[in-house]
Image (cartoon, rainbow, N blue to C red):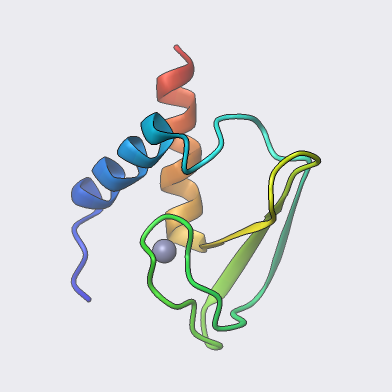
Length: 82
Ligand SMILES: [Zn+2]
């Protein structure tokens, strides 16, 4: 559970490279209480007590992130866009 952000950033980066996570800007992002979905970045369950960000695309299945994982995904997307 003591995830080091650097290793998580590496996971997110490889998922972006593999195409498992989208590069494009989401259409909409909804914040809500966790719904026991698994996080698209770290694959851990998003607990009911945690904030879940639900990311919607037109041409991509809806994906869910922990709040912190969403921030890492966003940072890595911007980094890879340059
Ligand atoms: Zn996560």
